[in-house]
Length: 369
Image (cartoon, rainbow, N blue to C red; front, side, top):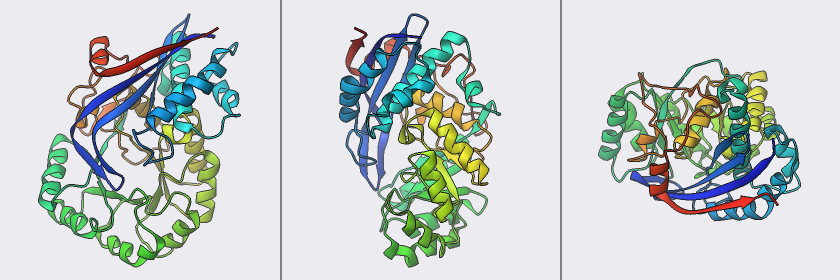
């Protein structure tokens, strides 16, 4: 197909409650949507960059700039465009994986809609429902944390992930384990908050029988993670460190991780995510789908990915109502701890115009010459 134009639409979506991690506190989620338009169909992609460069070097304004000035013009000029061609077309531009992922997803969605093919089938999904966990931010008190966790378990979530940082780790994790028992699927996420010098302290987490500890050290420190893995019984899962299939293969070969979190935005798109899944499957390494507080547009794409066979652990694929009072797509409903994988063509959902307009703060079209 050939694109006739691409829309960049920036949203401000207030959160149900402030979400605190080791990076800081979010009260409003900025969202950048990309709509790829062709004569055959339109497609949607969600850029998961945050408002500030704290999770990665990318942030919403930088993504908008690189899309506007470099990525979109390169793609608009392409004949016989397919999603598979996006990465080669954009390879001359270094980095900017979140921006590239949003554009690739929008093109892939348009391509599959035109062909009447669901994204899940295109990726190789084997499930129609995905087991869901939920990520719990840092709270002011342990009692507040226990109440929040209880609410999510009552809602039916199958796995709890606790954000941790120095000074907020052993006591809250121990309290959750004591209150809810050994059968609770429980894991923790450090978001790079520790150093190898904290190894002795982190080994104290072993007593809580966790599924994993996610990204304890800096994203560049694969050797540090490999050393830490030698003293921890708790499996190390890498998030920020995994930026490509090659990076995943390197981390696994070094012994830096036993589990991998796959986030399409972090690795440059759904097609690279599938390659990471395949690399991990070949090495017997389980994967799960991470989340970035996506709207229903991003959540639909993640659910299709999480239905692949190697995704054997519940992901951060919680219903968007967990974060937002009102989403921009028809709601996803948690059912017995699972969400249904959309079955329609492409990502299987469309933003509802009235809801989308209510949270839009800017919109621009970039058209083909």
